[in-house]
Length: 164
Image (cartoon, rainbow, N blue to C red):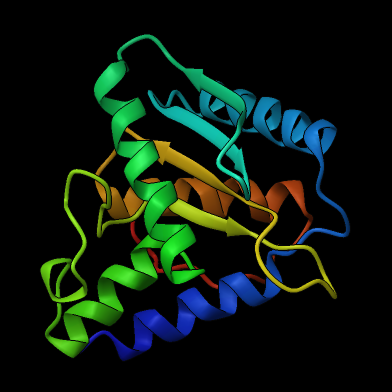
């Protein structure tokens, strides 16, 4: 059972919300994440998409490629479908004994793993977009996003899964 992990993931989504989110904010976040990755010597692909799926920021460090881009698209679809992090969806379905087939979804289009996180704006309903990462172990992809958002949004109190 992943109850403890799911509780932490929901808390992360509750705390890591933006005051506003638009294309300029996506660019600032994206460039922050790139610098964070460089500073910590992390080889990673990053994508920020608006709610309609438009890729407003994307970066791939040397050592990433088209496969990472495809993973990020699948992670976005998962975030959008369940309106929560892709890792939370993976854990919830695992606990329920369900998979993509149970929901008539195809693994070509969805990924039940970490690396997709919803972008929410305080006091607004629905998602503004999603931030995605690919190239690490999938839980580490999730934790990379959380570490970046904690620092970017100045929310050091956000709990983590402790995977490093």
